Image 1: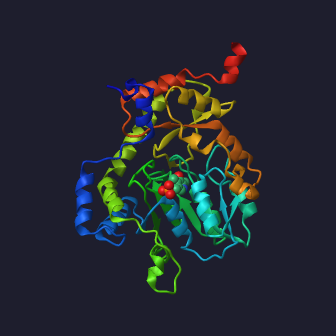
Image 2 (image 1 turned 90 degrees about the vertical axis):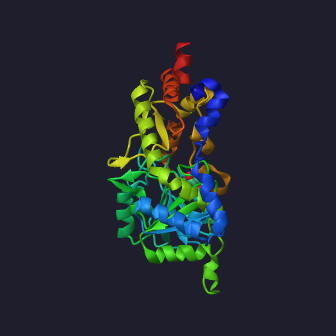
Length: 377
Ligand SMILES: *Cc1c(COP(=O)(O)O)cnc(C)c1O
C-alpha cells in the first residue's frame, strides 16, 4: 500500500526521513564492538577507505559532524583570526557558524541568477588581501559551476573549500564535485544523503592539507606544538558508514530515477525545475522547483498543507545576513534574495514508491498561486 494512503502524517514521516537502516548495520556495529570504538579504531579507517574508493579522492578524514568538517577543513590552510572568508548568503547557517568560532569574518557574495553558485563578478569584486578562503555550497544536490570558481580561486591563490553536505554524489562534467576544491566537507547527519546518525568527513587531493586537517581533529596529534581539538568520528558511527557506503551509488540511481519520473508527471506552468548548471548532474537529494512570476512561498504553503514537506522551510527562504547574529555582515545580494524567495524542495528519497510520486505530482499539478486564485475568486 502506498505510503501516502496512510494519511498525511504517515506520509510526512516517510517523506522527511529516508530510512537509512540496512540489514548489515548490526553486523558492522558488532564488528566495531569487537574491534574498538574510538576514533582511531580500525572501523573508522575502513569507513575512510570506503569513501575514498567511491569518490576517488585519496585523503579522507572522518569527523564527528558536518560542522566539525568545516571547522577542520579551514585548519588545512594558513590564516589568522580577523581574515575574511567569502561565502554565499544562500547556504545554511551551519556553514557560517564554524567561521565565527575560528574568529574569521564571513563576506557574503551574491550568487549567479537562478543558481546557488557564487557569482564570478561579485566574487572578483570581493577578493582582497584579507581573503583567506572561498567557500562554495551547492544546495539540495544541484551542482554549481565550481570549475569556474576553482579557476578564479587558483588565479588569486586562495584555497577553495566546498561544503558538500547537501551534495553527496553530485557531479559536474563527469567528476564528483569534491574533485574541484582544495578540500571538501560532508555531513552524515541523519537527514543527509548518507547517514551515520551524527558525523561527517573531509576529503582532499592534497596530502599536506589532509594531514593538517587530521591533526586538528586529534588535539594536534598531542605533540604539544600543534593546535587542535577532538573532532574524531567514533567507531559506532563509522560502523554505520561502512555498512551504508556500498549503497551510495544505488541510492543515487534511485533518487535520479525519482527526479526524472516526477518531472515527467509534472504539468503546471506556474513553476519549473531550477535550471541545472550546464554539465551538472544533480544527485536527487531533492527536486528544486522554482515559482514563475510569483512568491515561491505560496508553493511551499500549498505542498505543506497537502502533507508534502519542504526542506527549504528550515531556512525561512531568506539570506543569512538577515539573521541577527550575521546582520553586521549584511550586503545587498539581489540574486540570492530572489532565488530563495522563488524555491521549494520536493522529497525524492529512495523510500518513496511510484504511488507516492504520482500523489506528489497530482498535488503539485493542482497548484495555483494564491495571488491568482484571489484575483479570480
Ligand atoms: C547539515 C549541514 C551542515 C552541518 O552538518 P552537521 O552534521 O549537522 O553538523 C553544514 N553545512 C551544510 C551545507 C549542511 O547542509
